Length: 110
Image (cartoon, rainbow, N blue to C red; front, side, top):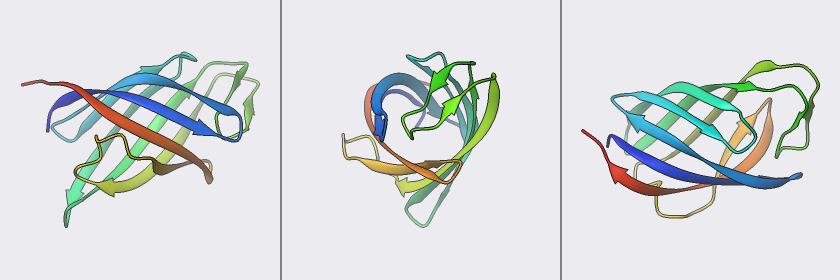
């Protein structure tokens, strides 16, 4: 499953996109707002449980509607099917607030 993906997300405050790598249980990426994504995933029973830390720059207004006044690290969690990269909208949570995200595979990586 090691690959790089395009992600598009939306919430109460609109949306944007970014690029993210998933492979060997690790996640790393960044989005248009300059937020950096780092975390891990576990595959279990045909599903993927994702746990991330988002490093968000000061002055960022999140898709969830929250505004970040100081640079901060915040948790993001989600669970979705292993065939997640088909453009379907999936729900993840930032500080308990829902954000819709869709993934499309750019290419496989070793």
